Image 1 (cartoon, rainbow, N blue to C red):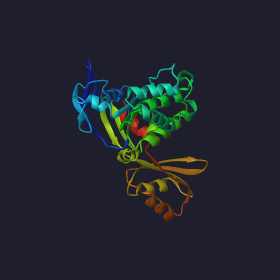
Image 2 (cartoon, helix red, strand yellow):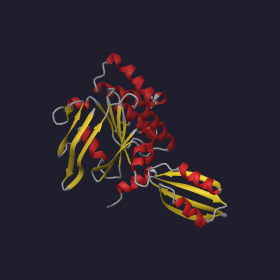
Image 3 (tube, helix red, strand yellow):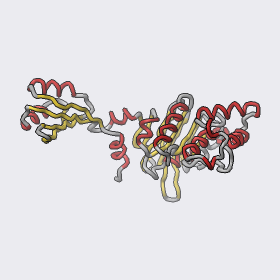
Image 4 (tube, rainbow, N blue to C red):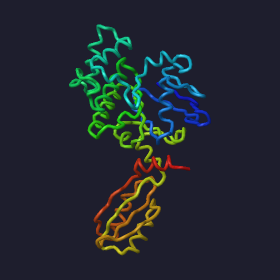
Length: 309
């Protein structure tokens, strides 16, 4: 659907995007994740024709942004971070106005607006002025605006920024619903947003792609992926540490005591060694009070990939 090759953008001497290569398949929800200033918004503005690249090319369904931007824009709906809606208009009038601009035939306009109201949950506010709406509802109006011409690709820049938890959950559900039929690209620096919404994650840092895959793939590919936390009774600390450290796949053992219990943390690689650990404990006839496996969180992976230096 979208092919990005060698995409580079400079602002004076500042390199905002540095030779990015990326393929985005049809019918996926892709999260563009990165700290502030990583290059996410720049990439989106190039995709939507608001900025020209310094180098590289982007093709959408075989159309190049250098030669076919007008045709590409017909395929794309774009929602910036703050929805650019006319505050003094009634929601219905505003969507009718947008539909007129986007060339929706008059005889099909009412049906399209009703469909947008249902998808975006606007039925209760269609005859209210936009300036009276909460930010969550204004964001829904902006989303309906972006979808007016039924685009094949939807690009959302920080779609839940500034919303309360209930509004965030509602917008996420709308995005998941849309993603069943369209290609969706959303940028964010909120990790829970990615886990709740996206089936593919691209992490950008300082204009470069530093990770690409599903959240599960990112965790599996992280070095030192997991740890196993144990709590034992009837075990001597020195003996338990030696026995568990000898298990293949255990890279290290940390010990401590709490409320009379021996607590251990086994540092593991990517291999699942829980069965080996359980067998070793059973052979020693220790009493197992706690056994949990902890994988590296997306927050930790993100921090390691985007930290200074």
